Length: 429
Ligand code: ZN
View 1 (cartoon, protein in one colour):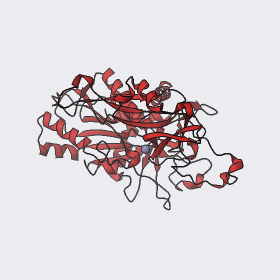
View 2 (tube, helix red, strand yellow; view 1 turned 90 degrees about the vertical axis):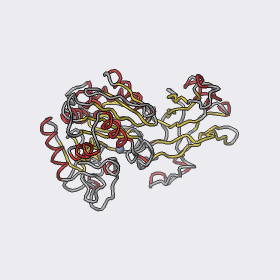
View 3 (cartoon, protein in one colour; view 1 turned 30 degrees about the vertical axis):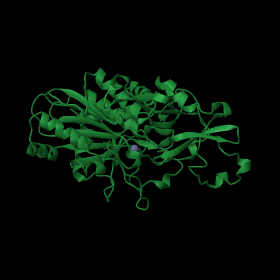
View 4 (tube, helix red, strand yellow; view 1 turned 45 degrees about the vertical axis):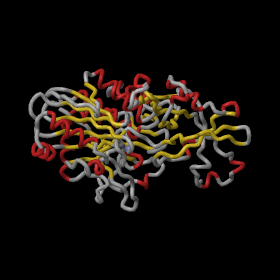
């Protein structure tokens, strides 16, 4: 096992408290590897053999490498940059009892509420300010500034057992009442956006817009009797995004147009301008084809000769709830990449795409496992089938096995990231 990979994953997760930071962390690695940044709002001048990346909304990213010679199809690996959290509302400060300042937040995605209590939290995201160099011009430009209050800032305290004797018999949480974080005593009044402005290196009145989220401050760790487990915030889906990027960078990318895609907003249904349901991938593929002189017919031929791997984490069998898993498809931590199946096509794996992916894993000497929901459990969905409504191609849904999905602190196997790195590298070879 390559011991660097779990450590590198931990570094990547620590750099990525929000989707904006994850995209920025990936962009830095791509730039370091010689990729050229493109802007959607400018004309592209692409060359065979070139490597490029483009972002949308600062929270989704597509990186691609064009082969030296004319190509016949594409190899696409897609994952997502966002994780369930709580978003800071407008006018967030709430004074109560003349003693406390809390922050008004709303849920983003479908998280487990309980593990957000009694742990240090902080705030990260982006703020938008006017570009001072365009002051006085008819159309001002705006700058997006990343923000991370890199210290223990907030807590959502539990109600004591003495005031809620039924707390251990199942609890219903109210997002507006129970989940508001405590920010300070009365001296904290009117300081929240000062704190944000300082971290962004701007003044408070320069901030014209914000997308700010809570995040768990607990550091990732490797643990267990033989250090076989890795726990961290946001493993779903930064573990797949990281492995996809690493395999993409190390793959040869010689015969196919190779794309590493990471979409925002998977946790809220993908239906945004930068989500998997948007035209981001289709627009990018269209522009690449036009730029290189391919016509519409070529594009459709290429699509038919392509494979997409939709990589989003999967549920491992839970040690205390073994009955919740399907009787014959039982993924375990450290046992390899999980191929996901669903008869009703919430996962778009079929016999063809499963065979293609199994073959890739065989070539890479990587173990695979299979997941389906129990037939009496609805389960979740992911990127693959949503992306296929815009760009339809052979797609396989896969993921790495994990426990406690959508908790702010999730658990995976220490070996599995490397398996996906190896499979991704083989996929891009
Ligand atoms: Zn996911």
